Image 1 (cartoon, rainbow, N blue to C red):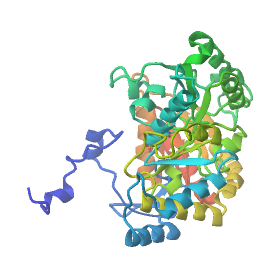
Image 2 (image 1 turned 30 degrees about the horizontal axis):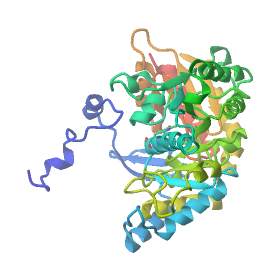
Image 3 (image 1 turned 180 degrees about the horizontal axis):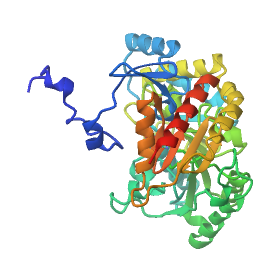
Length: 441
Ligand code: PLP
């Protein structure tokens, strides 16, 4: 078939879509063709309010001029530079900017191309760090039930989502999981629940079971996003930090969602006041426009590798596109947009309005829980008996028809708008969702 064959325009069969019910989608496609500010435009010319910042990534909204310009200018100046044994200035500049905005002590940045790659990178660094410190028996990794750490083998092994694990063989060995942080008695809590810090003590059980000398790192999302917005109880992350420190275990925060202002602070580590050893980021780093991720490492972690002859490679890891020039230029423009518009503070200011609007949905049909933190919100629905996920998915389809984009995971509706959202748009988002909930079977 020739490349310009006209059927290529309308044929949906070739693209095997990720995390999508391909047959359902292709029988009734939802095509987005343009985006600006808070809105997408669909192929049939409708405006759709973006209640999810794309996939939790377009934190500054869409088609932001500074970012668009940076992409164009960098493509025009230099498209690509080899990532190994060569450098280009913008990657160094972006690393410096990230260091400057990160919690004190997170002084070194390793570039990746996605959240999944950031996770693999952090897990590998953690194991190699322990070895570099003469603790080669520390290879075990501890994750959490209902954790999401992307889709590569390390990430699905430490992750706690059954469907992401069960189809893919034996996965990594030497992995264990703590319980998730969602307690039924905390239903309808606004913000962080008061009760449940004790859930972190399960790590002591795991340490006692395997021996601390076998454990390299613990990885958690400060707020578990993809499995339905599970908010850590007050004191929980602090307790995890205490236990990991006591046993010489590294603490990795997967901040792929919580990074870049989602909670009204630069990172979850800032919001909760808890310092990890490694942080995984992606998504909001480039406002979702060009794939890029970054792992931030403490000086202690980084410096453990900086021994031996200087001409030798210290970490046998990296990607062809680590610190890619167009991605780096995009990251710089994105961080500048956040800064000049004060978007992290803006998110903090509007978060109480978001919380009130979200919790006003309490009492509507099928709603069994509502959770929120920063500009993240979730509404959990009672599943239809025998048809888990069907009710929330219908809510998603109905909202889309009414011009509002939400996301669902299981029977949980998750929302995470761009940080530029206006109060009237919050009203529109929750008003539309309320109308849809009232009519759902
Ligand atoms: N980690 C967390 C916490 C995430 O939420 C995600 C994506 O949603 C990832 C990792 C994976 O990121 P990516 O899809 O860019 O690989």
